[in-house]
Image (cartoon, rainbow, N blue to C red; front, side, top):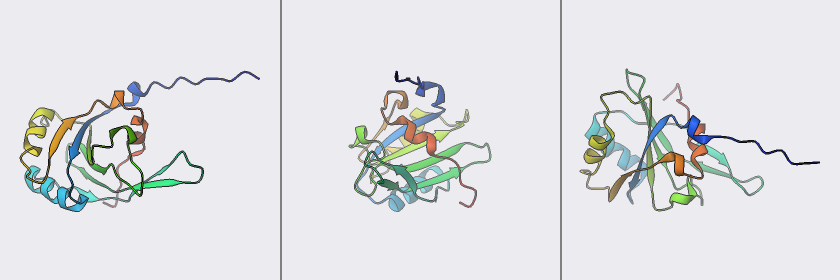
Length: 147
């Protein structure tokens, strides 16, 4: 029997902007700093759970979310989980900020410049999600109602 190959174009499903943060501090601490600087309210959401390549193994990753009145969604996602990585090809990144439904008021270069002023952050960079092998992991992130 011949194998069938399904062609999945991840680029069609990338509907978000992605920023990488290098920072050695705990997620709640960096979240507090981001909230204070940007005047937003990132709040702790349920941990993300991903099935890993090892049979029966899962990885859990903390994340925070904020949805403003324009339905713009901000997520802070920890790249380091329980002994694994959310995006393994980006091990140097500690956190990702994912923005969905970006409004015209949110300019990524200005946002990056602001984030760089946080003394706890070592580096901030834009990430091209289309080039990530594990970009599909971001597709599992959905807004939670109770946050």
